[in-house]
Image 1 (cartoon, rainbow, N blue to C red):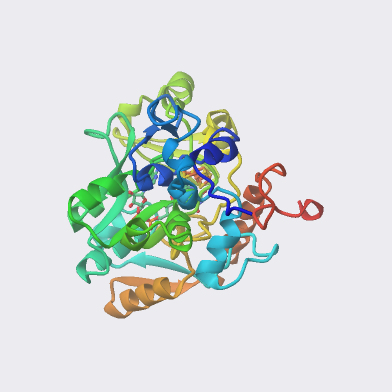
Image 2 (tube, helix red, strand yellow; image 1 turned 90 degrees about the vertical axis):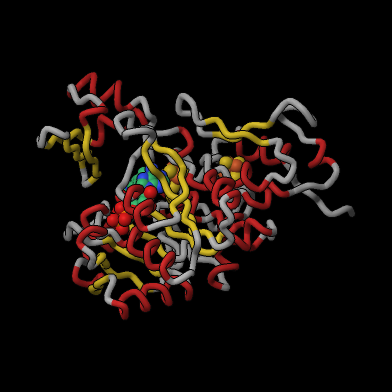
Length: 375
Ligand SMILES: Cc1cc2nc3c(=O)[nH]c(=O)nc-3n(C[C@H](O)[C@H](O)[C@H](O)COP(=O)(O)OP(=O)(O)OC[C@H]3O[C@@H](n4cnc5c(N)ncnc54)[C@H](O)[C@@H]3O)c2cc1C
Ligand code: SF4
Ligand code: SF4
């Protein structure tokens, strides 16, 4: 029997149009024939194929044997067990709803400027600064805001310096396919690249490595994941924040989600928007996502817990552990055991379980689904 070589036509029917596609853009950046594009207009956040070479639903290069897009995709078939096995030598158990965990701790930057710029403990930015200084990476794929920031449009960007890392710090709650910035990073000469991204993007490097996508797999040297329940459509700014609460996007200085949408405006005032009002603007690509805890990152980071200004940190891989230990030894971060905040760890597992339920029964079998009996 001939070996199956799944390609764009399979990705299109099984992921892009089936509701599984998160919009992570991994397929777009690995395509060696440059026939895939990315639509981030009007809340779409999906790959699409140009008319040439087979039309939008098929690909002549795929028919001839190119499988690159399906190999990069962290939602194609048994993506989860393949990435688990590659990173941890085993598949996570059904009880490991937040993935294979390693060490769980609280961490924060000791540099006041990094701590101040960061969303929680500034750990992500501290890691990027340290990794750039120590030649572990030569660029990071991050998210910035378009222009002067007043539009709140999140844009995938490359950070090569401490200044650029700090300019990108903080959280935006609309989608930013940071993977897309890979092309600019490589054009600028980068060979060791960190990908910062939500859980869906954090699986990209492991997926590329285990399914062997060549140079892209080698260059993505570090994966830093952001815990994530969902992102919101850009329309939330005009249709909810402004229409119901009178908060214009240009007036918003910072946002956070801690049970409610917390919004600080440039005039120094603070506002809260109930999360249940925001759910109607959930981005389509998040609705079937089973991964809250960035289960395939080297280091996963989140803001839940009793302690503001600390990052809840899951150190998953040997590489992640080596980085955190070296940073602590250098004094650029301080850490404390997660046991000091048992509520945060309990909430991590609770939210991870909620996300697990979203993986549809119609998708590929495998550990991505939570057994029906335990839902
Ligand atoms: C959309 C979204 C949803 C989240 N949901 C949760 C949650 O439900 N529970 C939880 O505990 N934590 C959540 N987080 C993670 C949390 O907000 C912090 O990002 C995390 O704790 C790291 O904080 P830090 O201070 O260490 O990072 P920082 O030093 O502030 O660095 C954050 C990094 O994230 C990048 N980034 C910011 N916004 C985006 C974006 N939209 N897309 C891609 N990259 C981005 C920045 O460029 C920066 O490099 C979410 C983050 C995002 C972006
Ligand atoms: S999940 Fe990512 S890699 Fe898969 S089809 Fe969607 S954008 Fe492409
Ligand atoms: S919930 Fe978060 S991790 Fe999942 S698809 Fe949406 S943005 Fe990605």
